[in-house]
Length: 386
Ligand SMILES: *[C@@H]1O[C@H](CO)[C@@H](O)[C@H](O)[C@H]1NC(C)=O
Ligand SMILES: *[C@@H]1O[C@H](CO)[C@@H](O)[C@H](O)[C@H]1NC(C)=O
Image (cartoon, rainbow, N blue to C red; front, side, top):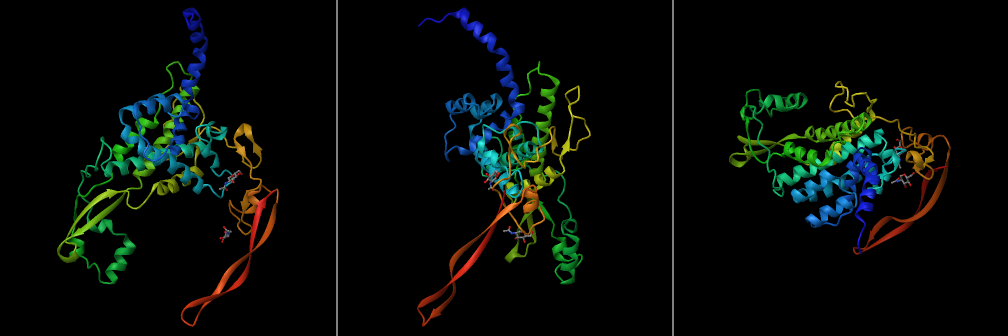
């Protein structure tokens, strides 16, 4: 069938504003649409076609799709990061009115994650933190081409006395562990081992998460929202950098620890540690207003989370603002905190249910070989918001 070229041009021109609008939507949530990748199956092969497919279906933004095509090895870490983000967020907010359940809707977020709220700030920061964490792990495991172990810090290792917590050193000295000037105090360390290359991981994550900047003709507001999102992204990446700790391994005859090699690592922490840090910053997030330049005022500290729109109180269902309401949520009858019925149910009251369950209890061994138990009745009381 022959198409009419004139008509096609017409269609394109009339679609142009819409296309521009779609490009700008990175600031309205396309930058976190990749969180839907968490549903990808394990071992998914990120071929060119798969990357382009994710782009066409709107999960990846233009620059993200480019990263996917040129460094498919990072995708595995990002898929895990998407899962971490969802799990950590829901765990962190499980007792609050907004419990992060809407993150599961990715890529079709509800408006509280699109309108510049504190909750959106947390999700942006958390997704960045999880991405850096997973990529840093990938670096250390040698599964990424762009990085491996961190280059050791240029400065000399700190002197041991600075490493030991004062309380510990006093206690240890009292117990005769470390005499001042004793052998343990003198055994300093060399940098070695495989430090987690958080810096490279952060660079890769930034390239992926940054997304395309607003089109040159975009309004000041679009630019402003973009810089707020990017600020929150950076706060998330920094939260991982701040989670690095000194880890050491002892060498020397029969564990004498006369030689130690140390590196800066993420240790046994997980993205949960960065999540806890970010949750505290969520509580103290700062509201910013658009300026005519579209730039952020310089005085905001890198670590803060920033938001542009006040959140609803999430008490009642309000689809337009992305509030699910707390009706039907379980609350704690004896807590005065966020999970307490008074706060969680927003003063609407709650219903209390008592459920009796039968359990095996008071089990005793008889003769040598069999166990005899009684049946106990236990009452489980639950409270549910009206
Ligand atoms: C989170 O809140 C929603 C809406 O109130 C509710 O449907 C869901 O069950 C809650 N999830 C958890 C884990 O409490
Ligand atoms: C309810 O809150 C109290 C006081 O904060 C706490 O000790 C208790 O473990 C909570 N119960 C549940 C089921 O979370």
